[in-house]
Length: 309
Ligand code: GLU
Image (cartoon, rainbow, N blue to C red; front, side, top):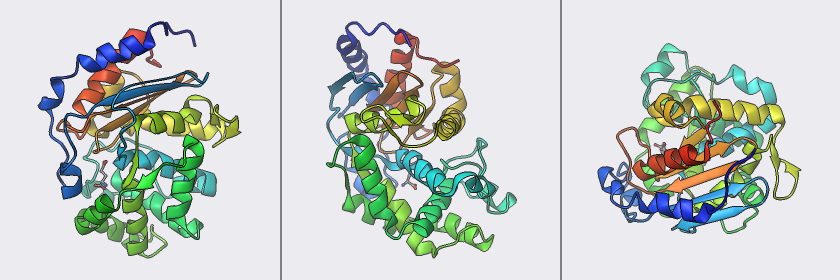
């Protein structure tokens, strides 16, 4: 893909600088106390390309809570483990509901709309708990391998906070269990889910770890297949329609890239056949997406002509 990459660092710096005052327009996630303590003024961004180029600006090496971005990694692991059978248990449609909504799940008999809303990610956690003898360890090892970086860890304060305030997620899990769509014990499934949400990574690690989704399933850093081409296609399709919470339509409309966001303020955007952008700033808009992260990625996509549509 031909992009004008001259002065990429300057472009990234200018875009991030232009956001300096914008973070005040959002609110840091406070549904768990541990997230509310993050400095709202931190902001960073990074871009990694499948050709091996990397540029990071601002606080791009500051680790933050990846939260729902973890749903992408869990999905890839589950697809690798159970193949097409996964799609008997979870759908691939946008939900049109908040990420932790419970209403639709009852109507639809315990089958989550997609793997990147909470119900779907809890179901994926069940797949991992049921298919790995040590799923949390397997999850962290997977991240370290694909990011090519051992320095990726779980934030135990965030984990404890998630656990202490996890009643709605527990309700989703028990509802699915009542429809026989959860195999393992619910507390074990939730422990895995909260663990993966509590992983901390920085913009560089996130951008590099997801390069395989921009490169037809192959990690260009070491030329190893992380998933099949078909699976990479499917993950990107789901991220295009559902990755940005209930603002996914607007993100497709204005940016045009598969992306996933988390309430820790991180957003990753996949540019097929080119690379991955990660932007991070904790204050969120009313949909749960980082205000600065959205603006930054929209600006870069516009400037470099990155839309896939
Ligand atoms: N751990 C969060 C929850 O389950 C994930 C929130 C998010 O990033 O969407 O509520």
